[in-house]
Length: 309
Image (cartoon, rainbow, N blue to C red):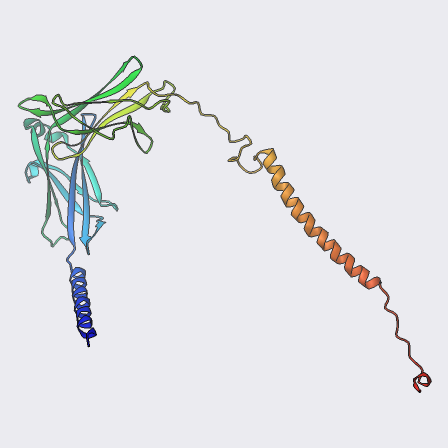
């Protein structure tokens, strides 16, 4: 009799779980926009839009979404570009020269993105406010100690002033990613808008015969300045001459170019295995031939007289 309340509780829990799952499946898909601003080497600026569809608590990229980008206000004169997202749900564009005067007039700007998942739906709006900023990078090599310094400035009242408390990453640009120069992943600017880190990468392969490498100072997803990046080329690397070993014997070489000792071992093992197989076959034929050469004596008939006692 005590098991009945437990059974009732289990049925109620199953009913509630099924109801919650049903409501979750009936959730209306929602289009989401993510707007980002990028500045490279304090000169090249571009915007990136990411369109995603949220359904059943999952995000998936939306292809073919029409997006209109505006600067400061939604008007034809402030239109930056009309974009269409690709298969990854992203699209990007630069700020046209026609909006240069508007951009130079104010220290802060607002970017507005409008998009529709379907032509009949209401437009989805995404906004991004950005303050003008720039980043500078410099190097110092004193007594064998190499260091990299980055300075961040924001534009206000017609002048560039130091930006305090901004997180900056300093790294060496490599193929497919960046390599931090020291122990710290990032640095925070002081009251002078400055960060500094010691360069501890020894014998780093260079990008050319002069031993040059590319240093980069980067600000990522800052709420006030967005994404900024500046590069500087310095001769702090080491040049390694590429030697083509395609035709030489090595463990990673093409067929018939393996080391002689490895080829000898492999062919010896193969030869030994096949030798044992042929030896067994020969022995089978010899046994068969010996069996044919043996003469079996004929049985003699016993006279019937000898059987009588």
